[in-house]
Length: 118
Image (cartoon, rainbow, N blue to C red; front, side):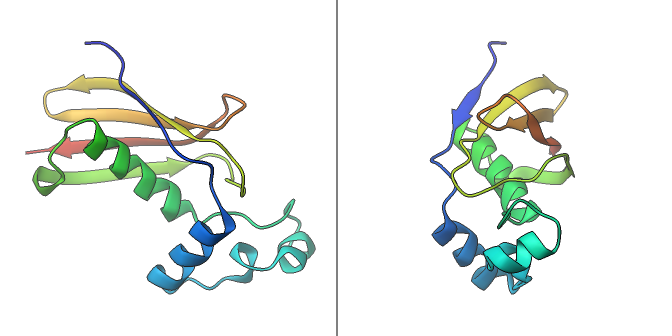
């Protein structure tokens, strides 16, 4: 199997705001620069679940049928900031299970995930 890769468009503030609206998660670390910095962060960060959703988008772009997704688990490893360039990489495929990771522009893993299909 050749490794599958999917490069996402840069993460935007609008994307983060849209995710906040869609999810109902209006935590100010995702929406307010001053609040995020006061909380000890370098600034606004994307929702972890946004990153997890990007992983499922990569699976779909690679041709996996998400209607047959039985289980999808992820471990969040690093924060995602506006402007980050993310890349999904398929790490392993075996017996209906696909392991993937998402890296930022510096090659740092921000998420590792496993999807099991029926």
